[in-house]
Every structure is written in C-alpha cells, then in structure tokens.
Amino acid sequence: MKRIPVILDGDPGHDDAIAWVFAKASPKLDIRAVCSVNGNQTIEKTTYNARRIMALLGIDAPFAKGAIRPMIADVMPAGNWHGESGLDGPAMPEPDQEISPLSAPDLMAKVISESEDPVTIIATGPQTNVAELLVSHPEVKDKIGRISFMGGGIAYGNWIPGAEYNILCDPEAADIVFRSGIPLTMSGLDVTEKAIIKPEDIARIRAVGNQVSQITADWVEFFIQHPMDIGYAGAPVHDPCAVLTLIEPQIFTMKDLHVDIELTGQYTRGATVASMEDWQIQNPNVTCALTIDQSAYVDLLISYLHAYDGREVRI
Image 1 (tube, helix red, strand yellow):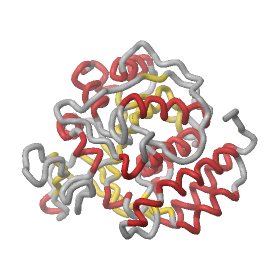
Image 2 (cartoon, helix red, strand yellow):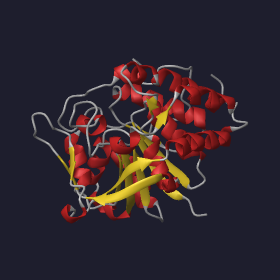
Image 3 (cartoon, helix red, strand yellow):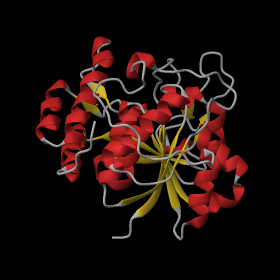
Image 4 (cartoon, one colour):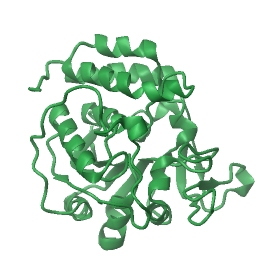
C-alpha cells in the first residue's frame, strides 16, 4: 500500500492530540512534518503540547513553530475547553524533537516541493499557517493533493451562533484556503458534534492497556467535563474527523458544496455559508462531511490504539 504523505498542522488541544493518535497509527499515512499554530492556546503552549504529543506517539518528523497570531484578528484561546496549558489532564513526556529554524509555511513548502507525490495537509486548528503557505509559496500549490480540515459548520456555529471556533479564530486565512482551488475536505460541526465519546467509552479506551490508551482516556476524562456541564452527552472529539475522512471514509456521508467565508458580518463573522439544495450548488469547492457513525468512531479509536501496544516512554 502506498502511503499518503501528510503534514499535521494543529493547535493541541485534546482533540488534536487524539487526531494525531489516529494519524500516527494509520498504515495509510506517512507523516512528513508537524506544525503548531495559535488557537486553543498561545503559540508557546501549543508548540510545547505538539512536541510532547510527538514524543508520546513516536512521531519522527521535522517540526516547525507556526503563526503567533491570526492574520488580522486577535488571539482567542479556548481555556474553558482545554485548560490553562491547552492540554490539561495527564502527565506527558518532555519533547524530544528539535524546533526547525524554518517557519511553518517554509517547512511545509520544503516538504511539499521535495515530495515525489502530492502532499495532504491535515489542519486541525485555525488555518493561518496554511493560508500563509499559499500566499508565500504559490509555486507549491499544485503539489498539495488535498487539505482536510476540522472547521466550520453548515447548520450552526459553536463559539458564536453563526461561526465555529477554528474558522472564527482566523476567517481571513480560511477565506484564502476556501478560494484556493485545492481539493478540500471539511469536517465541520455538522459531523464533529456527532463524534461523541461518552463517559462509558472511557473504560473501553483505558482497557486497551497500553500507555497511549491510558493517556488518551485521561485526555477524554478531562475534556468531557466542560461539554457535559453545558448539556452534551459526552465529549465531541472534533479533530479526528479530519484524519478519518481520509483513512476511514466509510463511516461518513459527504456532499460536495460551495462554501464561502463570511468576513464582515456583525453577528456572523467566520460563518461558513453554503446552500444545501442540489439546484443551488454551483462550482463546489469543498467536500463536506455531514454525518458519522458514532459507534464505529469509538470502535475505530479502540482499534487504532492497539497500534501502540508495547510502546512506552519515560514521563
């Protein structure tokens, strides 16, 4: 099987961490680089978290520190979801991967230009790094096979009624990505809010019995607290959908839509605006995941965690 070269770009974040658990465990993906971006917490915290996750999972790839702030907007950390560190909960190993002297867009461009095959970018945070790549390195655009991202929502938002957090953090960056003409797969709130891990699933995750499964269970145990306090049935673990649409597409239903980013609305800045009726869809630019098999989602997490059997690192 020829593996898909991928770049992981995120703002870890508990759900980013679990997305990377899937990515590293998958025999279908070849992780060529990892980049941090500001979002769930400051760039210093997301950079530290990303490198700790790499150490835990054994991701051996170049790492670059990404955008300190959005292109125009102010930073907007999500400590109420992810805690003061951005990855509160279990103890983690210290980083063992050096930070590249290259910026995130420059490292992405290097990896993409040197790859024999098109590279897929998996973006699980604000799209600042990806947009800056497209602006500063237009020469690599044709070698980007796809951008699979968690962000947006056709039906509704979460941070504000009209907009989802990742897009709202940097709508200008998202607008550049959505207008790029590159194949896009969008895992928005329409599907990710159905990607629920329930309290009773935590024991199943822990029962896998390896170090990564124990820490994953602890991540969910922390992350589940806030959503359940506000009425969720469990933790909507959003970001793995951006990985699973690539490697396990059978658990989703998807539809090609034309989606635009609202940049100026007083109440709708950051909204992902689409028409759902077939007769209204012209020039589709995004493949949107709309539903997910929730039980299969949890079963897949259990299955992929077994890839870490026998792996243990010092904490």
